[in-house]
Length: 414
Image (tube, rainbow, N blue to C red; front, side, top):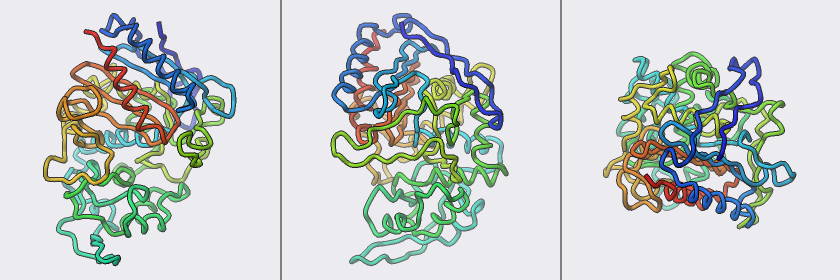
């Protein structure tokens, strides 16, 4: 039976973290309604994809009813070496940072330190007097705002902010020229750059996946009066004993860093991911954390428990319900195609609104997100279940994510 590992590396003293990450309790698959034979099919599939060269390796965890029933590592940790993938390998989780930072922001809302309908300019003055860019005949025309960008807009990606890599409009090109991808600028500097660029639409009208959560990170810094990293450690990571989640890896963790193929196996395009050992000036709320499956599992179990893990409460039950409800509705046009059919978007998560339509099994009320480097997770309250898949294969996320989700649900038997 798969076992749950205890983290074997201590956290550096300057992160003020406990020395060990206690494991979530383990269970035999059949004790929590999962078929051992069907989980073997999942393992066989992962090995087959690795043998085909789809991904270098990966780590998969499935937990149900509060216990981990499947936790396996397959393939190589680094395709340039022979070290096998390990259950405690570290990954760039990229946009799986967003749910953690969104929870952090909502903790401040619960303290009455800001409101969802507050304008962002209340905390970052550069967001005052923004303009909307309307492209006509190859020329960008600047138009006034109908209303300002709010905190809720940032959380649900209806701010009019974009990612430079998610389109080829004149506005996307302005982002690319502005240096928004630099890890050597601070959160405050990134926020100022983004605030100085035109919005792609009127706030609240369209869903554009974007730097919005990076701006949330800066709002947290302003409200809390400390860096985003310090806030996350104090309020989320240390209380949940997520001892190996941070904005960079330490030298002691060097031997456990998961790496991608140097070139995409399908297109031949060079794969360039950031160096996990480099301590960046930018603590990216939208995609900067590195983590392990065991660490992220503690975050997932806290969410599945309604905001608590053990004796620690991170977020209120009703606040979490609000976050995991659809905040788009029929009035918001979904422009960036990162949400599957059958899903809306809440405050930091994609939210399944119906059982049908989607290309994978699941329950209404399921919520999830992924990371562009090849990671994904989902939480299904109706099944009392969560699952995590971690790999470093950017071009194959769209293939691996639905595959592991389908096979994990196929293992449910009661």
